[in-house]
Image (tube, rainbow, N blue to C red; front, side, top):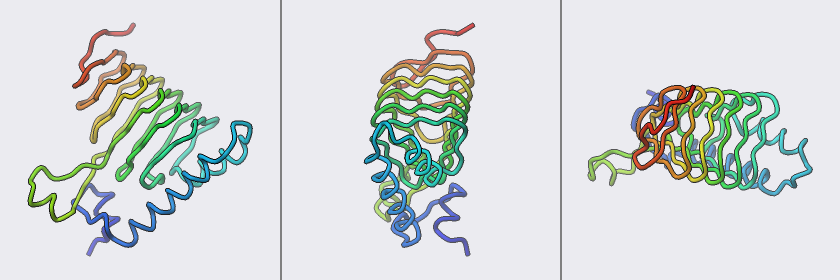
Length: 185
């Protein structure tokens, strides 16, 4: 029988109150607190904590505190990744950022979701869908990426946009729900 963690990672309904998952979230919470207490000049400590927290880290990542996530080990960031102040990543499934991705302040990325049926929600189960972001993407401040979306290479998500479906390559999306407002050359 699959563990709750295995079910979570496979996108099946799982129980987030499972002790193994609680312990994993507590570990990530402690690493986030440690990271968020570092100083701007403490590049070495920041790099060590990010490498312990995230599942994969490219060269020269930069994350401005405060930063929060659920588990951390489902997050992969490419080379020259940058996240500004106040970003949140709910990583019950994989969240992948390509090379040279820029996140504005307060960007939220969600993989966690809940059943639509009230009775199932009352049982406390949840599930998730992965999120992927290509290379050279800029996500503006306070934008939200919802479960299961992907953002194509070189695209821009405008500040405050709520991405509810996939974003193609080389476009600017804006609004709630986000829609293509411009194609990039």
